[in-house]
Length: 107
Length: 118
Image (cartoon, rainbow over all chains, first blue to last red; front, top):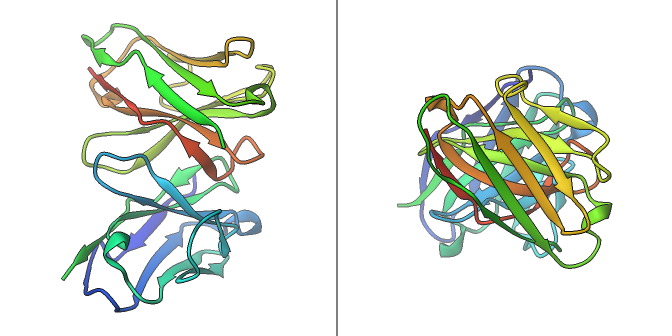
């Protein structure tokens, strides 16, 4: 099973700042089959990115994804108040596993 | 987009059983793989099971294989999860979710979830 480790556990930033979230895999992720989700309290996860760098439908371009192999990054260029929540990465190249999440909170 | 709505959650004793249902609205339910994903209180997400469009292939996470059964009724646009021999560690919100294209894929659509407490 591929284990995904996300860092940092919590990120405290202000609106307008840049956020960088990391997701590291215990093995290579096949074909960059790596996705990112945002989850807010009481809601289901919302898909943000797939294929490591492709934005899902309706996701603004301040969100970008990068990486390959075992190291992946989600960047939010200019934080808006609606961006705060918990972010999860998921690999779907070998079965499907999720990271433990990064909490993005308002500083 | 597929709209999904789960039901059937509740409180059950260890060793008991529960059947979850998920109704889909919109067209083409029969054209989609479907999955269950769970989230234990205050923790992360965990893929549970996936079923092929026609029900002919099923995949399970190791800890539920042999205890849980995923099934579907395409005519009624319903997805099911039969959960037997329930354990305390099965306590979670259970979401039905639609993989984009493949059995293991990004989950494009999610229901609101139903809570199972063991």
